[in-house]
Image (cartoon, rainbow, N blue to C red; front, side, top):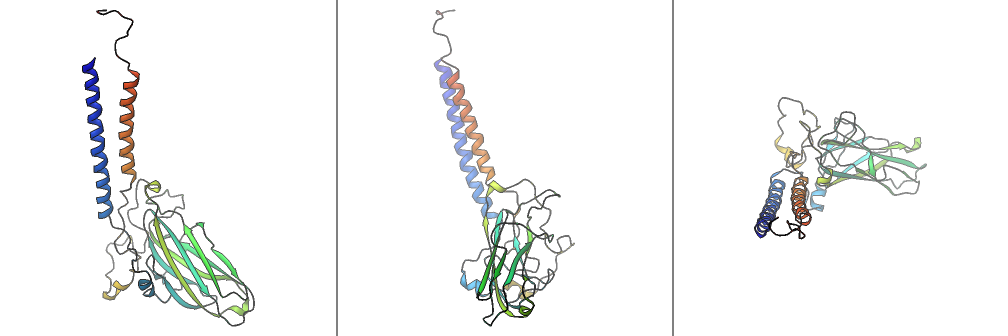
Amino acid sequence: MRTVRKMTARAAGVLVSGAAVAFVGGVAGADAAVADSPSPSVSATGEGDAAKGPTEAGTSFRTATPIALDQRATASASTGDYLYWVLPADVGQRVTVKAKVTLPKAARHGATTWQLDVYDGLRRRQACRYGVQTKAAGENADAVELSCALRTVRGWAEQWSNDPLPGNYYVRLTAVDLPQEELGQPVQTEVEASAADAGGAQAVDGKLSAPLVPGAGAASPKPQQSGATQQPAADGTPDGGWSSGWWSDRWVWTAIGGVLAALAGIGGYRLTRGSGRPTHLPPGV
């Protein structure tokens, strides 16, 4: 009986040691995978990089001005213009787009309603988790601020769904309701997008063969000009490239759950097996 208990204790000790090694190895592998996997570049200097952002906006999807995450883009426009920017969003990111429109100080003729829309690489209008997409500015308002927090970008989705997928995201800013006399009034606009990592809780199996960017199905990418290094590429590719999409911290928690389940099974067996031989039986029976 003592021999059996010693063997059981030794087996439990071996499993615990193996669990510790697996946990340490999993965490180390997670750190290595996170370090090796490319991720979109995030500005570290803040105001300096924001000042270097583009100072104009496109007038359609094809001419949208590329911007990077955490980069403030400005543009001078007229009321009634359609302004477009394009930015990259990768797997597992929750992108938030903010826009500010500085209205003219001259006398205005009524309230003006502004709207901020975000479209994915397939030009599907994306819903906002929260934020103010449409807002009216009164006659005496100096500025109007809009925001849209998108859902988490998924690595893969069903064909019937409208889930946001990795690739380019187009930002459109325009006035949707205004008096006729307000058309052509000069305005100043600011747009900035930021992203937060949603973590493995939002990870899904599978990934797209290529991000949803213009020319993704082309045989070879177009050569970039030498001066294009100062701003994002025209196809919206992040500076560090697109992530592979295979790694998430779910792998670590899955391994930890398996180890805990094994330990729980050993503990339950030791509690329910008893002392082995019933005490009411005489020796030798």
